[in-house]
Image (tube, rainbow, N blue to C red):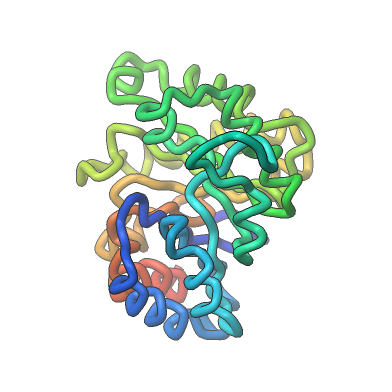
Length: 254
């Protein structure tokens, strides 16, 4: 954790969830009470098909809702895409951009990610900008080089702690059950913090840096206690209310 920064836990459902999954979201909404909200901000990012219903289920609760992606443009001939303005119209407050699965599966570059982050700001959303190295890059000692480039190119000028969250997800740890050691995470997050402070000054000091990659209830307390880890971007464990809330509850202990 970073002193004076309120932690943040985001659940990314990815391409999972249909209407029968909404009972889990309702349980999450009931589980994020005011006492927990005092400790941590919590957001769930369901698929776009459930976004509006999710915002209605979480209405009048501290649970916030976001989207998993958006287009750079506000509207136009972009079949199948969803704009940041559409997310805001569904009462979403956040949007994940630059996830490694988007970068890999859809060929998104740092340029695309920066444009989507700016689209989020345009629509009044907070952008959760993802960065992360592959296993080959990690093994060859190039993690900081890769992350430094992604931070430089994916995070637009003018980013602040109010409109931007950084999520570090080592690609080799996503959904694999593998996690870096707490010492490795500490070192990488310290590097990210230094880059953010050098570029954005006080805003970089206050910007939240999340860790993602096989975060589970049984390792959450250890991972989220690491310096400069200001929360988590949770994948598979966010699909079940019991698991996701257990991760959030770890902040009562930290």
